[in-house]
Image (cartoon, rainbow, N blue to C red; front, side, top):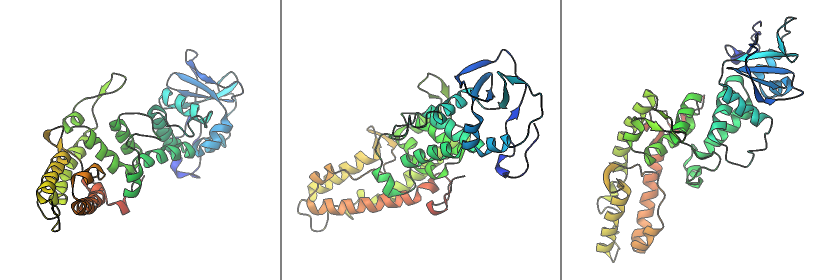
Length: 325
């Protein structure tokens, strides 16, 4: 089919095309009886409604506005649009487009989130793309206040490998979520695990892209150095015991215990990313009232410093200059 004009510059290079169809291709379960367009992805055909595509995607809206030559090949009387994406991605996206309320208040499985973001970005399915980005930003925000209010478990995204989500944010330019998400990857997995083959829930294995592995390795060294400097008060008596403490030996020992528990991973002397941990209320019972207050204040200050430096650990601009693509 003919290329459209320059009405929307972002559509260049991604417009689907009308094409002939191999009779051996497989029909998807997504086969709308009143559909008036066939979308072909890989060897799979989807019968859908052009009005739905045009309403949701500016790219398809542009394409359908261009008159097509007569006598084009059809399937069940419907013209065929060929796209160069994975059929499973389109299957998931159509499931959302035709049943948009299914995940309205539920956690969105990763195998649906990823196509919403990839195809939404490529074909300007703006509602699908924006919803996927919103969920990622919710779980991995760009503000410390929001981070402090996020549950330890994912609530807007279904259980998934954080490394898969990290690759998706890099691929699709959700840059504002990379610092918090990459930090979580380093906090929850050893560097050895992240640098070698990662086993997925389906049994498959893969390795992170080289640029991400290098970024994580460098970031871990930066984080370790920054944490040592920022939480140095845990290693000396500058904050605890407080000068008015009446149980100095007890509070000193508890500070040392706190430092060890924060710093060492699983009892081994491995780097642990603790700089964004919350203040543990149980610590208050171990310190005297004065030392507990002084420690919580110092801890909060150190935590804010780690947060402000977080993007730079991963080679990104500071928070105020960090923009999504």
